[in-house]
Length: 350
Image (cartoon, rainbow, N blue to C red; front, side, top):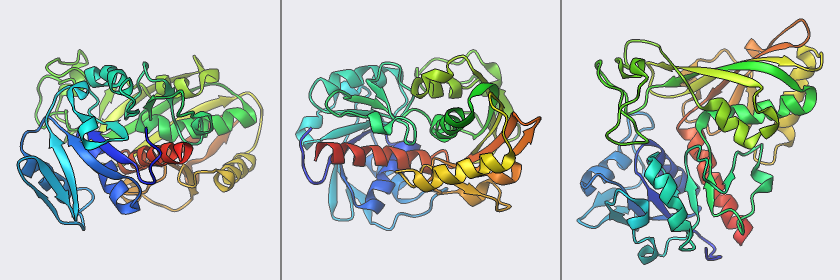
């Protein structure tokens, strides 16, 4: 990767996360998206989906497309349509870093091939084969661009939960616990009952039949990789926590309900003071936020924090049995950390 003042960024996969990251980078004016690769062959549709968004509204910049590119304001973005990240000619666009945002297992695997061409890759998923899992507030100080060429930014749930778990484990120790996440529907789910289609393995279906039920009318219990993803960043908690999830019939903003058995006895006041101290001293000010406002999920839409601790529901039983409730915009908050990773790469290589 070159040490330019402004990184030239490629985006592989122009779905919800790919477009959200692009919008955030545009708003920050740090780094320039110069190449987008997506299997959708309709360039005009890619431009349309960036410009108009049901969740986040209309983009201020003018967006147009022709047969080979998209223009965002005055900037030209090369468009290609390969299904394999390794088959894209990122070098032609002089890309400094690629954001792999498809969630497809083949692209996660072949990110290694791109990195071998001296183009670092940020994988927007929990990727076991990555050189490093970067979760701000947990592992960001350990990131080394000289060694870490394929960097996983994990999943939205781990970005929300891991910083809180780290703070509590460092202060009091965590003996055991459960985490239940409530996650909005995703694009691969069904409007009407049918097979549950895999995003990671296109063409395959999940054996978890309930996930194929209509996403708009029910809460759907399902397994989740939240704890496994957290353990990659916090190996000291391996085997300590269990988890499950509900897919809920809303468009955006997740919540997590954590019930933890602490090793040390404490008080609600001390835990609240801990969270206030963590919020005050964190290097990245957009990781943890605490609030006691009587808000609901929609009020956290487009909040760029990794997590918001809702102190109204902070409860302690028998001095060591703790309940903590988190909120997080699973698209915008997470994508903000992906954009922060781009910025971290620029600073560490500058």
